[in-house]
Structure formats: C-alpha cells, structure tokens
Length: 365
Ligand code: NAD
Ligand code: GLY
Image (cartoon, rainbow, N blue to C red; front, side, top):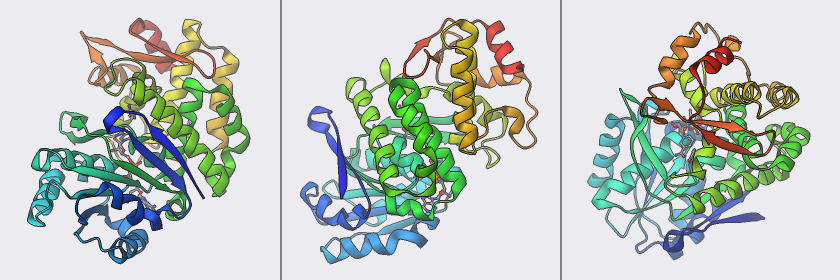
C-alpha cells in the first residue's frame, strides 16, 4: 500500500510515493519516465550496505543498466571535491541526456546527486529515493540542490526538480535513532508553520513515528510532503511563502556553525532548538504565548530532542558570537536578518523587524 502526493509544477510536476516496499517498485515507476533503460545510482556506503541489493535487483530484473556510484557518507561529501568526483564518475560511465540519475540516500546524497544531474550535459533527469526521515519529509522534495563551500553551507547550487520521489518507510528500519529524531524535528516544523491539528496529532503519535509504527510513519511523512508540495507549487524559488520552511533555521544554522557543523549537533537537532528559540522570540514580541513556547519545548523534550544550546556537549558560544554566525546566513540582505516567527501554533510569518536587543535577550535566556 502506498500514498501519493503530487507536486503541481506544470510541466515539471511529479509524484511523491510513500509506503512500505516502494523500493521494489522503482523499476516499474521509473520505466515510463526513462527514455533509455539506463539509471546511474548515486549512494553512500551505509545506504549501499543495507539497501542497494534490493534496489539493484529490481532494476536489473527489469532490464535497467548503469553504474552504482558509492560515495563516503557524511556532510564532507557535499563539496566541490565530491561534486568533481561524482561528475567524473558519471561522465566516465558515459551517462547521457536520455539517461536517469537516481539519488539513493539522505539529504547529502540527494543534494549532491541532484546538483550533478542538473549540471551534467546541461541537465539530465533525476529521481529521488530518500532513505533518511529528514530526506523523506524535506530535502528530496522541492528541487533545492547544493554543495557546501568554505564560505558556508548550501551556497553553491541550483533548483532542479526530480521527476519522481520514492519514499520507502521500510528503509528507515536501519536508520539510527538519533537520525530519526533529527528528521522528526522537520516534521514538527510543518505542524508549527501551518497545521495546528497535525501538531496535536504529533503530540499524541510522535512516539509511534519514532518507534517504527508503519501507519504512523506513512501519515506523518505524507502530511509533511503535502504541506511542502503546496508551498513549493506556490513559490518554487522562495520569493515568499517557501521561506516559512526555514522556521528555526536561522537560529539552527548559527548553532551548527558554532559547533563546527560536526556530529555534536545534527541539522535536525539544531532545527529543534532553533524552533524553540523562534517561539521564545515570538513570545518576546507578542506573537506567541508562554503556553505555546512551553508546549513546543515539551514535545521536543518528550521525543528526546534537545531544546536548549546548553544541552549541546561542550557548547560555549556567546549570544554575540551566535549573532555573528547569523549575519553570515543566506537570509541576510542589506545587513538585516529575516526571521520566521510563529504566530501561536499552526501559523507563521517572516519579518525583518527584529531588534538586536530582543535577539540578544532570547539568545541569553
Ligand atoms: P545524511 O544524508 O548525512 O544521512 C545521515 C546518515 O544516515 C549518514 O551517515 C547516512 O549514510 C546514513 N543513512 C542514510 N540512510 C540510511 C538508512 N536507511 N539506514 C542507515 N543509515 C542511513 O543526512 P540527512 O539528515 O539525510 O541530510 C542532511 C543534508 O540535507 C544536509 O546537507 C542539509 O543541508 C540537506 N538538506 C537539504 C534540503 C533541501 O531542501 N535540499 C532540506 C533539508 C536539508
Ligand atoms: N528545506 C527548505 C526548502 O526546501 O525550502
């Protein structure tokens, strides 16, 4: 059984399939989209070990050829060096315009493979087969691709929409709990920015999502994808409403920078703390109640996510240092930061009207 969510982008529209075992359907789903039966699978060593045989078996049985390119796991792979290596491997394998790239992994593989697909031969089609919870609810949908440079994260990239997203909840069975929790933070984000009833559902069922209940996982991923699909269909290039998806991210990126983008703090973990900080800022500015702040913090706490910088091992950055990191964010223009502020639970807006004083008070609290 699988659920389908459509991303309505005119001639670039595509489906997101969510279910258990959709990996086994990859060949049947890709065949109608492929001009030739050649698919280059891009994956990392962890995903390959656990799941590549299943994917390859189905594709080979249906007559698909093409290389499986294995990259080292980790954020460092999303670099110019990683991109050069991957483009070289695709060109050596003589991947052509009519062929397909298949990104099989978490957000690192999805972002890198999507970028390489957008660049090779001036752009070839690609399919996202996300294998982390974060990638299934966020990074595989919406067409943002990028690598990191020494100047910052995700600063070199392009919009390149996939032709199809296949989210198999079965592959989450091998994902470490900490990675599941980090992805879960992005699910909570959708409830907070646009669906109070979904947040209430998560308060009741979040533990089932983390514990591996298939129906709960499918529901949470589907609702997240529906919300992201609607936002992307309205504002593909982030001229407006898409920025709401960055709730908690301005704070979160500063925390990630302050911890050296290391395994001390995963992206989703930073987003959870960042969401709570955004609520505190909203409360200070009169847009959220103390009860809202407490409710959001309690939910992350209950699911084992950190909600304060002090909980990060060895964290020592001062409020001024965090603000300096924020000023390097993509969301700065004319020296002013754009914040996503929640309005209660289930609504949010963007503003550039936040004084450094209120920001410093929240960061110091
Ligand atoms: P990731 O890709 O690094 O994966 C996390 C870890 O889990 C890796 O070690 C990986 O090898 C392993 N893994 C993946 N699937 C597995 C599975 N099924 N079983 C066992 N291990 C598995 O991390 P992520 O959290 O998926 O993605 C983070 C990246 O996503 C960041 O680079 C971030 O910038 C990017 N991102 C992009 C967007 C976007 O819109 N493009 C949105 C959010 C995040
Ligand atoms: N992850 C934010 C976005 O896709 O816009």
